[in-house]
Image (cartoon, rainbow, N blue to C red; front, top):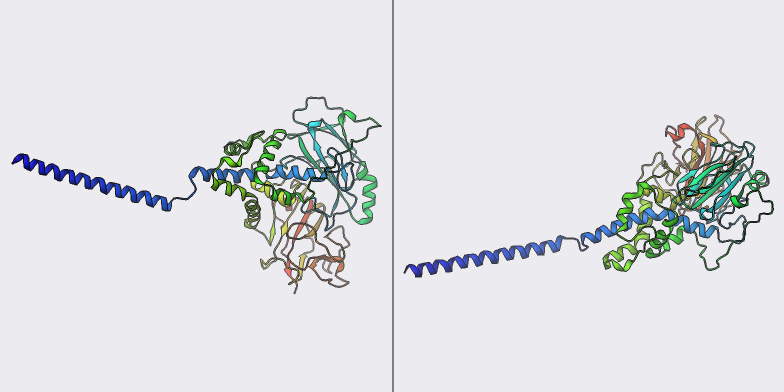
Length: 482
């Protein structure tokens, strides 16, 4: 009897045990189902890969943009106003117009003296003429768009000067009377600018100054019979605007170009953190990026990076606080680890100067926080007497379309500034009329033509005074005039 009772108790215990096991199984199964429902479809490792790819794309954007710009601007057999082979100067002899597409946001204030440098070929000597107190600057950008030196009136004066430009690993002796400029990257870009006050003044600048800028290899310096080598024109090379080319570049090609460029244009010590992050993708100097090694979800996301980057950089600008409708970015030309700002400026205005050389307040909306539209409104930018843009050199306002290129207009006027014969009001104040239609004879001197549609404007303050640098002077808001 006791055996029978014990048997029954054992059976009941087994039933309870089995019930508990089934209950636990159901709970675990339900939990598993729930986790599958609420958990993202992309695994954690894939999320990390996608974020690393985004960071890598932004990080490398300036270097890739520089390389594509160099290819376009050096695809010439001989130097001319259109372009020049590597290590030769392209001298601009007129202001850009609405057909100019080599760089975004070109200025209409100075004549350019441009040269793409390949310092792997050896040191270069830059000869600068006496500019006779005329304002000029010759910033040199490394491959990552940092300004490594900015010779010019502000820093080195206007007398005749000699500079020796070398890579960081050059071991030679600097000749006497030459100032040594060292680039941390083998690729560099000389973006010289010389003040031009009018079309008539331009001829003087060309004959006296532009032709006085010379760039020769150190090994050939002083040789009277030196002739620059003929470049190679690649007819298969795309001459589309560099911004467009980069946006259309397949991501795998983009990252592998970045890998190759980083060999001669090494990252900086401060980049160690991001370099560690992106190395998991196969991105680093001399590495090989292989898109196919990632999951389909990661591949699909990476392929969309160009579109994502365009929107991301645009959003960065729109999210920045505007003052009186103006965006003022500071810290240009010396980016450190601010990769977002560096990439954004590379896409919006490649070749930007140091703040001390120029500030670039830009505006795309009026005092009512509405986007500019020349088909709907006329606008006025009013400066009170004594409160004009505080520039030690000069200032100007330039009209651009939403792609940041100059726009056609009836009088071929793309910029307006203090070098123009502006008409002040009786109280000494100044009105700039921004509209698509001719405002009438009396107002034409102060007319900055706009397109019959959307646009944006950029104020350039060359050699800004301290009030502009510290933010105590801000441009006034543009108001509707109708």
